[in-house]
Length: 302
Image 1 (tube, rainbow, N blue to C red):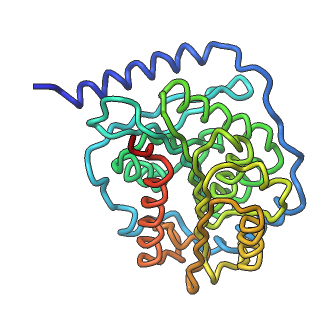
Image 2: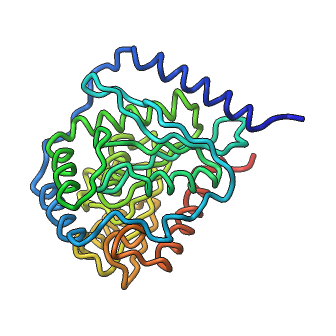
């Protein structure tokens, strides 16, 4: 009998070998973004207000198991500033050939158990998933710690950009994904849009959960990929006005986009470890996300 799990583990072994080889190679020059803007710093302060009373204690929503077996591994996917960066790499246990990939970008807390659980659920839907780490292995336990780490990224965006660039190369070249999407929440939602701007023609889809967005048409014009935006109507950190301006800019540019605003949902309503968790809105948003990824990452039938 053909052992699909054994095949998947053999594929993982090959990816690990390629990763270790790549870690010793010259990565070339980093593509540094513009310096941190006033808007970025204001976004950090807004997130601090939104999460001021939150804890990282998980609710039942964080315990949803993947729909089928997955294989996960903590492995290095990048080398930034002479330091290896480790992420959560996961794929279906019955994978035989490379699947489409999703680069998952964590919230302001860091690459914690909740994010890894969401990555596992996503992989079970038929994707290779790489949950990246923009905090260099740190995980915040309090809002003040999270604010400090988010600020550090904002003030050193070249490192985060290089991190994302190498994550894309990893799933594209090392894992062999035929199509690639980005997906992030909160802090990671903003970085999902940044990923789209970094790879305007190469990325196949971008999902933004209540992240910082822009209506600057010069920034948005190059984007070729479909975009899904998920936002809360009661979110004080990502104002509805900014979301509508983002949506209007996409419409003027005739971009393929879907933007949903849940009227009564607050910021981080899909985070099962936050006080604003809204299970009904979170589940609806998750189903919209799966439908969107299915549309954009599944090759058309020949």
